[in-house]
Amino acid sequence: MELIDQELAARLLPVLEPTRHKYQAGTVAVFAGSAGMAGSALLVCTAALKSGCGIVHWFYPPGLAREMARAPLELMGRPLLQSLRREDQELISFKHYPGACVLGPGLLSSGESRSLIKAVLQANGGGLVLDATALTLYGQEAFALPPGAVLTPHLGELQRLLHLPCVPVITGEFLASVQAFVDCHQVTMVVKGMPTYILHPQRVIHCSRLGNPGMATAGSGDVLGGIISGLLAQRLGSQEAALLGVYLHGSAGDLAAERHSPYSMVASDIIAELGTVYRRIAAA
Image (tube, rainbow, N blue to C red; front, top):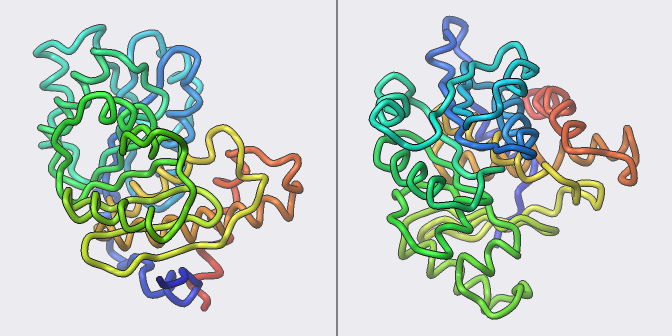
């Protein structure tokens, strides 16, 4: 097992060419949110923007037009229809949205969400982050996982994903079983918690001890998914995006705790510290 540190993060940092434009910086498509859970989607989108990608599209479901109107000015909105019809299938075609995709945060656990996820998986040709409802629906009825996808479960989601009888305790034997799943499906798994573990097919397991109890707050995992998707859009591989994303997330969380205290921080405080973490890594 290897520890993620600043030296490793510095080696993984995307190279910023002086001539790059927003399309070269990468595009992220976010399929997330529902009535009452629009904040989940907006945290993903904002974190992706702040992670350095060029464009973020939020494909939002019906009833969230008002939330889209209050979204960050840089975010581009794409409304989805009530049910997945031909028009929607054309809308989610990734011919014009290469880069990365986030699926699951804040979606309803429903048949329509399952249809949406399957349609996006069929159309997607870039990097992919699966979280929250996407993982829950996979646990209920498995669907094909594209090789190279990044899964970001907390222990409760991992329990449902692997059909375990109870929330697992992290042991060497348990990590070996997760590694077997990762090797079988050729995906990258980020097991969120303290510490956080990153597993990649046929590679050494990485571990991060960054972070603090203040990050146990609603939306913190959505921020991580947004960061990883933004790095995937910048053409980092699945393992590299997961490793650097976990480092950025944990480091920004620790800075947020210093500024606000672990008692008082919220998920958006993590996003606000990303610029400082990037500066520190680049200067290392």
